[in-house]
Amino acid sequence: MWVLVVLAALIGFVSTLTTWVNRQALDTNSWTKASEALLNDPEIRSQLAAYMVNQVYDNVDVSGEIAKNLPSKYEGLAGPISAALRSPAEQGVERLLTEPRVVTLWVNANRVAHQELVAIVEDKNRRGVSTANGTVTLDLREIVVQLAEQLGLSGNLVSKIPEGAGQVAVLKSDQLSAAQTSVKAIKVLSIWLVVLVLGLWALALYLARGARRATLRNIGWSIVFVGLLLLVVRRVGQNYVLDAVTTPQTRLAGRSVWLIGTEIIGQIGTALIAYGLVTVLGALLAGPARIATRLRTWLAPTLNTRQGVVWGVAAAAYLLLVLWGPTHALRTPAGILLLGALAALGLYSLRRETLQEFPDAVHGDGPGLAARVEALWSRRPRRPAHPRHETTGSSPRESAAAEIERLHALRTAGAISDDEFQRGKERALA
Image (cartoon, rainbow, N blue to C red; front, side, top):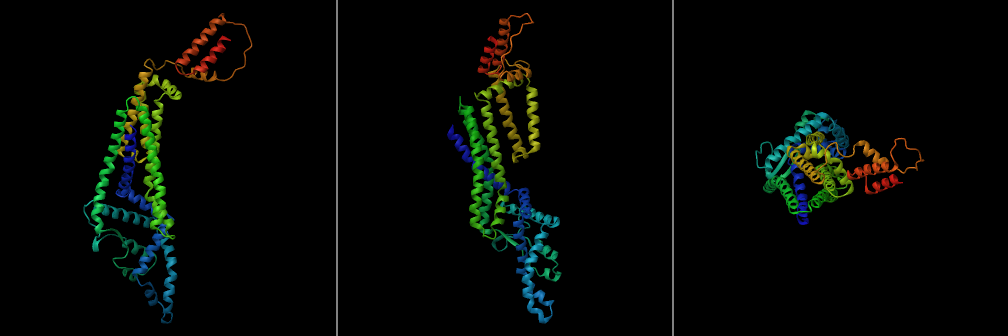
């Protein structure tokens, strides 16, 4: 069974990576949300402002335009003035990038750009995305023009910004075929790898006759391991990528880009750890441990005879969990159905076990709340009682027998342990 569990864990790790790519890179809503988060990061916003100003300076003779407005004897100052204006211009653009109107412009541009880019890699309509000169590009010229206007540049100067300004190369045309193949593979693998993992788990449980609880526990720990591995890969990958593609000046911005771009990996890893721990706890609850046995004893009367109450409470709790939506799976129809089915299967298995283990347990039988409190109270050390006369007319032997019988009923119901029963019996006979 270990072979199947380990194989499922390895495939599950690959599946989470394909799911991340599918959700982060190919989902327009996730991409748009990430683009807004990028713009809200100070380091990234600073780098973007510098890029926008560079686009203006690279495509317009700012120094020449300034010289035209200076007296002839001061035309030599145009260069220094132009250079001196660069830093204030970057600061001004950075402030502009925080304004709601510009943020909306940025988000909408990214949304449209991503929709068109996905259309290309999925081999659909290419309208709106340029593939000229062998390169797939996204046009940010409109943003550059509007920011230039906001900086107070004259209309004549802004009109001189060429059509090619703000063009960002996204994908080389010779890479397009490979990208389209990769996207198709990711779309398929992100679904079928999950199905394969679930099938391997089901097969492992089916073959583990007599050891299914232990196998379920191992599956839970394997899920936890995959979640931890994802978090480690995200952390280690950050250092590798930053060392490979950033400079000392852009390292902070690169780190922010990595954290935002891999946020979904962190979410998946955390969710897997939570799911795995819940699975482990479920396996332990079905096990022979003393606390698990006591808990099943306590739940058995309700589970055995009040199915409506049990399923109603479970359904209400699950609906509240769905409304909370702490994980992505609880915010998608497929995930809600899958996790709901697994939760129902776990509850069904627990009830089946209590029916086999405690077939005579009926709601209302066994110790009530008062008996449980009395059992807990009996654990406290007590001072020897002073002898006093009996007023009820019962003999000490009859009182001791009644006490021992009561203690025996509590032990049978699991409210007290064998040691507590023995101590209570000795006190009754003293």
